[in-house]
Image (cartoon, rainbow, N blue to C red; front, side, top):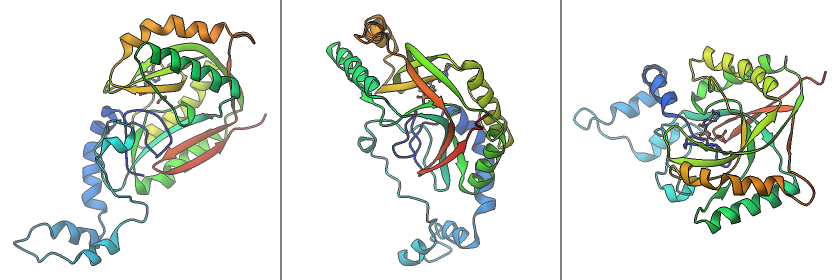
Length: 278
Ligand code: AMP
């Protein structure tokens, strides 16, 4: 799918791209756009000058759209109020690499409590539809890069071993554009192995001249988000929220993540890369 928002979530191939990704790749994309247009698409571009050509009938134009392309909508109400962080263009695929976190029952109960506490303080957050731990920024891939890009990830990640990591500390995150604020749970064990995975992913990113991950990553699973920069307000509540994590009847909650498979979401497609068993 062709839509990019300023954050993470898999629901619609949505993830956010950082403005830097967009800017650093702008010239490459523009070059590619003119070079890659097939003859029939060039005809569509030229057709925009009414003085030189008669417009083609719509039925002919629609014959040449990419199968994977989807219609563009700029209605942010359709995306939960999220703001698109890079311009939609046909053939651009919002892409990110991550470890999935399938939520346990206890996690979901805790999340409900966290959200209702935030709500009582006037902060209405939306729960992530799917939970994950990011291993890359969201970058923009041209459609014809998807295959070599995922192949490069596959060859690097197939050398990496499985491991487990855990998280227990709540932390507030904000995207680069400061259009979305997240409540996340930061990783406490497994940091070194996660850095190894990021090194592999970054290598692929560099090959494709895309942005690498944070120099000092704070690995986390985002639990919920809201629009705008609510960092300060959310930080004021962190202690109260953390006590919900720590003081549970069953003992402190610990998020356990079995890192057995890395995934790459690009538009509405998901690629899976199994990690080595021993
Ligand atoms: P994610 O749930 O992985 O998409 O992360 C939510 C947001 O946290 C993203 O918009 C990231 O840009 C942001 N973030 C801010 N600082 C960091 C950091 N040091 N490491 C990882 N993510 C970060």
